[in-house]
Length: 323
Ligand code: PBG
Image 1 (cartoon, rainbow, N blue to C red):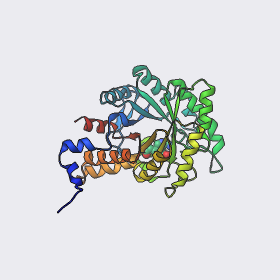
Image 2 (tube, rainbow, N blue to C red):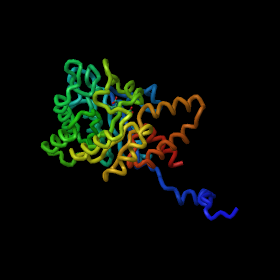
Image 3 (tube, rainbow, N blue to C red):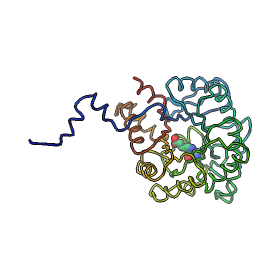
Image 4 (spheres, helix red, strand yellow):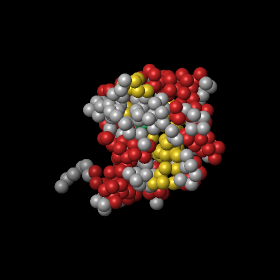
């Protein structure tokens, strides 16, 4: 054969493959989600998310020390509060679980980037991400609560607030509240294109945040839509988001790519609990190799255009990449 183009030349050895690789993963790309609970000496594995734990504050410090040793520099915190009510008032207490965790992390690891998930669903007794009135989630009534929570996180020392509720206008409201209280340097990573996804199942077990009645389809996005994702991202940018997020990641790689082609700010992708759990379960059965599959998933998210990957594999992947 008289072939001029032989693409296999660039695949013929490990050295050349490493040289021409277009996408690289590193521990610095990852954000590790952590679930914090009140109490002492608690490190309970979340059954649907193996290798991820409910952590009391003392155990949280140990966990984070390990993450830092692995090269991970950012975490996102989720709290399991001591009580729930209709308003979600345990979300904005100064001594709330997330607020305490932030203070302790920033005292012990000042260089660590501490991001806080901002939502009401773990804190309301009905499990919705907003204020419920007559069975409906009320947008504008929710915003003032979100602002209160944001301020309480900033007061505790959070570097970045990540609203995941999908109410309209929340980024503007939170930005304004932060600025008016002197927290101009606290950033916003907005869950901008957050879909109404069945892949959140294991997380809702972990965070005890499944809605008691109804579902989240009146605020989270329809998986069938992509123009709408661009609209949501554009609005969040106009309202002051510093980073925009697509969530989940795997079934939405096209959305991640559109985000990165359309907007000039960092794109985060949330590799969610269900995406993690399906791989874990199949690996447990010996049907797939977890390490290879997980690294392939993570590289695909990066290749699609994500700059930041929020993933339950953050520590495992950092270990694999170091090997
Ligand atoms: C809170 C929130 C959820 C997730 C992150 N923040 C759950 C939801 O919207 O139901 C899901 C994360 C995951 O599945 O890993 N609103």
